[in-house]
Length: 207
Image (tube, rainbow, N blue to C red):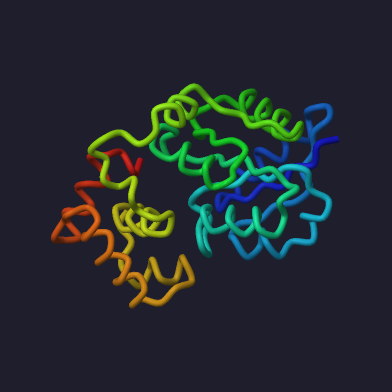
């Protein structure tokens, strides 16, 4: 039995995937969490073989959750399951230690295949993620120099969150968010937050 922990802030996703896992021979759900704290503090991780992790997890985000899992639970492989494009984010999360990165546009059967593969100690790479890893950063894509946290701040702002909203969601101060904004602008050569939003949509960093 492969025991899967589901970390996603949408209850319909968690419950739907849990039902699917319970209906498939050899798979089961060990636990669920709607935010980073709920995931990292769950005693169910002691009975977990694979974590399915959403990028947009409240309380720090998927990148922070992945970092903590790799540090504290290196024996548990992580499948990142996200609405964000594989070609933009997949390689970044694989390099950060994820065993797989799949867009939520992928079929359920492919997600289950990924869970089985990573449980065997192997990585599961979709064609888009494999291509991104093989080619490396594309020349001219300035956002490749952003840290995972800076990229997360940029995403949230482009989705319409204000500074205080971002601070609450990531459990950081508003001044830290403002510092991230300054650093992002410097790295991307942009002047205003409106330009940041335009950049994010132009480069498909938000859906």
